[in-house]
Image 1 (cartoon, rainbow, N blue to C red):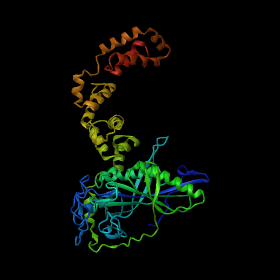
Image 2 (cartoon, helix red, strand yellow):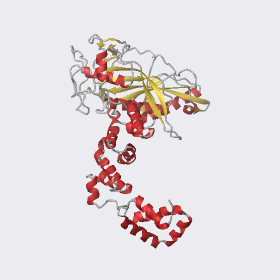
Image 3 (tube, rainbow, N blue to C red):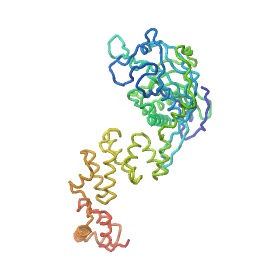
Image 4 (tube, rainbow, N blue to C red):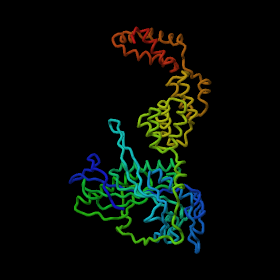
Length: 500
């Protein structure tokens, strides 16, 4: 692709070196495994975790005379993804043979798309922040293309002392290679880009985004330059399978290249690997500008052609995507941009929140989901799919607060009980005597007892009315947190003669 610089150099993203400032340039090629029951050109299963070489058809193993047949669902998934990236959908595309030799590539070539991909240029908008003023910065990252291709198998070098084994379960699985433009200028931007891309494909249901299973991985292209100068020589870091590792790899690689250039050296274009244990990249192989892959149209596959009706039928069934959902949460529910961003970061979190917020105050629901539920899940190392608290249970806790049955403090205790033991919140409140005390007579008695027992504090309140909060706290403590806080506060002020 032709490299075009669309970003104005920003000093806050410069990397200081010994001889001046530098700017890092990042582009990514993300391989996203298509969610489909069968492979791109065969009917073999794509189920993860099956025994080695059990998901292999004669086509995947490249047996003589076996011909590929396109999987229509994989084509639909690629088009859905292109639409989600606001990209150009090409109604005519070609499959090509990309020739290279490796033990886990049975055919001796990969069926891919070269000059005529199924999806053309698109864009992703990422948000960085909030900064110290609580502001977010939106940055548009260009998408160069998305093309379909088949995955290779997997070489295993740790099964035998002198031999390597090959597992072809992954051979022929459909991949979408999503190529960004070199528009990112920091490791934070690159992490935000990968996070947003993974969120989009998960919302669309076109890839599960499970990087730990290898169904989404990134080749990260990194170069450095003096601000405002031409692009430098890039190095490609292959198969990075974690968003955190993407950030670490870019940080290390940028520093490595800056060090070489400041010492008077030059950067060799090469392919590198990231070692997460050492936090560094290392050379894998040199890489020339021109690859001798000898691309040519695959003679066994006709050009892929479809019409506008095919695209429109897919477009009308697209789900609400993260940016649109965030905008709606802010507009209709009055959420802050930060809270809305957290809630739409994963489709499962957004779905959970909407179930809790249905018929309830959106801000209250957001506070409970973000601060209490997600906080608890983070402490226990679980994700939203593993939550022991259902949306109906959390909603019931919020309803009990609104009805005045329990106070905010009791609600926190109730949440912990539901989190660890489960159960119906209303029944727990009833059976354990957790109802809020609203009987003003009982509250007044507790207030009188605290005031009578603390004459010194009464004198302090006369000089400093804000000390009344101490009495409120003592009454709440004496009643086990069950007294209605508003009633306690009103009675304390009345008994101590503090004007509202």
